[in-house]
Image 1 (tube, one colour):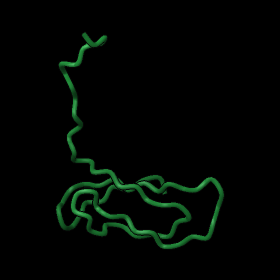
Image 2: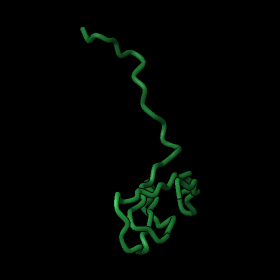
Image 3: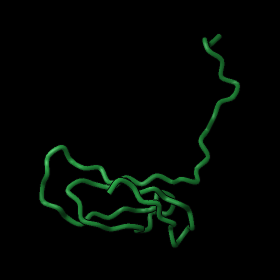
Image 4: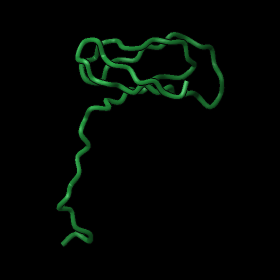
Length: 71
């Protein structure tokens, strides 16, 4: 699994769930992914790694007044 877009049933935000695999294969176990906004379980699957969850609806902060080099 590369990634999956899931809408949380509790807070209705879109979450991206990515599977991070280990460099070497191990026994697969059931891992759970939780919403990064409300911490409710949104996904569960077998993996030999873990899942990372990113909220797709968070506005990225952009500092428009940032000058380089800094004064």
